[in-house]
Image (tube, rainbow, N blue to C red; front, side):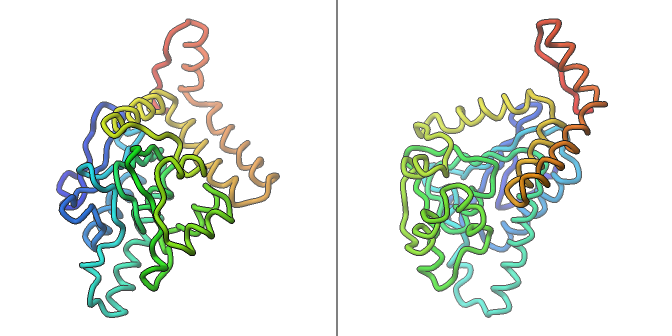
Length: 264
């Protein structure tokens, strides 16, 4: 796994769990072009070879910001062509996050504004510090969400709440985010990463093929009719019948021990 990034830092915390840091704390972990390129590369590599990583946590370096979104200082003075070139990189990064076969948990440790909020929404689910704040501020800048925010937000909070959040650009708290269904759990700031790690390790202890297939099935279920979704679920399910992990899971249950899944 690459470890030569400049704006992000992947840290393998144990055999199957990786923490990925947005690593520009001096700029509120805002995303410049290089961060887009590096995130794109990270998720492209993860799509090809997971190196037995079974859960990923994404968080921001420091205690102030998860990510402030696109770096507006970096964008100041960009031509239309330069802006669209940068955004095309972000678009590929968003697709990489969406297609990542490994569950990705956002541990939102501070401000998640604009593209930072959209990135968190693109993760499988979100844990947040009690001091975290969220906002989709794009309309206050003459643009709109462009990192799947208008797609993922209504699924999380419902259409009417999503309209309010997007149209106003107003910030909201972690407690509000949890009440609305955007955040799964609110944690004390000092406990955020550890509580997220507990969940990540629990996921990583399960059968990785099962998790991957379930992730695909859940993602498709929100895009198609129920009959088509169920047909895909059955295809995904039957992929696991001939696996060694399926045999190990049943054997371990009957032997009253923890299973040892190998992803095959």
